[in-house]
Image (cartoon, rainbow, N blue to C red; front, side, top):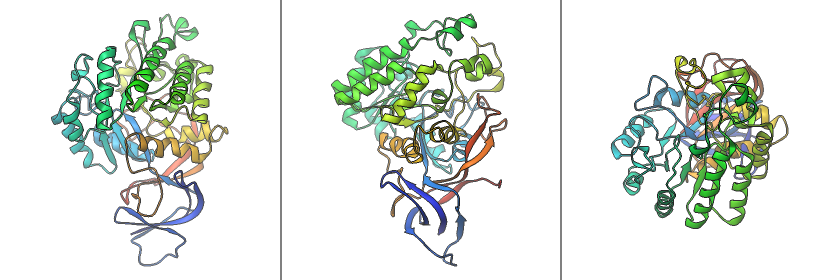
Length: 425
């Protein structure tokens, strides 16, 4: 038994924001109230001055395992997640080989089961991520796939997408979509505009995202499927999702910390460390994402944790891979750029980083209540710290290295066991 004492407990389900104690027993939250320290507890965690919130849930991570484990593997990815306060993550399926069969799915889940946090995975939507033939969605669902996505590659066959939605709706599982129509992209990783012109690159316009978001919102409305728009980056796409929700579509959208924190100008300063798909866009797009987070058009904050080796990111911009790591900085970026600036309350931030992601995948997570899973993050909201250059992740490809952020994770507890403890004062 563990007693978590005198922390500011935040529960987005019941709207609780109060200084309370928690008793953890058998992987569950046994009691909530005020308790005296006693010999009945194996450990007492003093949480005075810290926030105690439901463990964070990230619905969009790349652990590169199997096949690309020099970038990251399931164990190091899970360890990085624990440092960031995440107790549950959902891996993307674009591994080598991709998770389009029961054997590869089982490999990921078996490795994940040995980690200190909950590691789930999606399966692909199409076989081999080729966009031509659907996987056996029923078999993969029965084997434990959390949902389906070809993240990293857009699906261009509208008929295949419609069929996938119809089958996923019957299974009650979500589909997540990477929305970039390559027909409009001259060079990926940088927004088409002033910065791409300064770099002599064609860039990737918001149009590439907008046309597919519009298509899939309407297909979601028609099929009744649960559809998640991944890493939304465009003001127009935010408005399209908002409209689809008003029309009754079961559409959610996720925003990354880098898209609500940075603009395309970061590419001029950070180079390939700010190269990602979809790219960082304009200040107007960033403000629209923040507005979407505020009014509920955007439900989820997800990292799109995408580790790469240092030598890969050291290549010229056009040759370097897209993507950045994000698990170890996500909560602090949310506190620094959303909460401290008055865009979201801390309760709203936790809702978008824990409860709403859990709801997308039908997980019984995201709440602090008696009988609930003892998945918790304990953090000092006002603690200032400098990012990097070392990370628990195998990779260090972050544009935030050297930045000072607010909000430091002190403990991550999963199933009543301490998965991470910050040894620094």
